[in-house]
Image 1 (cartoon, rainbow, N blue to C red):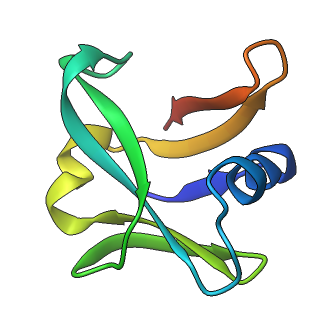
Image 2 (cartoon, rainbow, N blue to C red):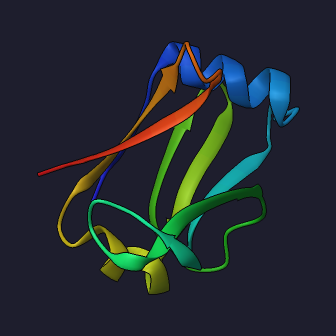
Length: 96
């Protein structure tokens, strides 16, 4: 499982979540909502330090990761984080 972040999405994390150089952003599974991959589960995001990263990538001196225990959610898909211009928020896509 790999994580891909577009430049526009990266700028959103910098401006809206105040993700600075050296910070870590965690994508995690949360109960509630739905996604194209699972009913009753959705993707959450917060600033956090990795404990046991299952996938991690660095963009512009900022790390984005998923913990090992949350990899099941992606079901073999990569995570693509884009930016939705109309909604002015990140858009999450899952691709094999």
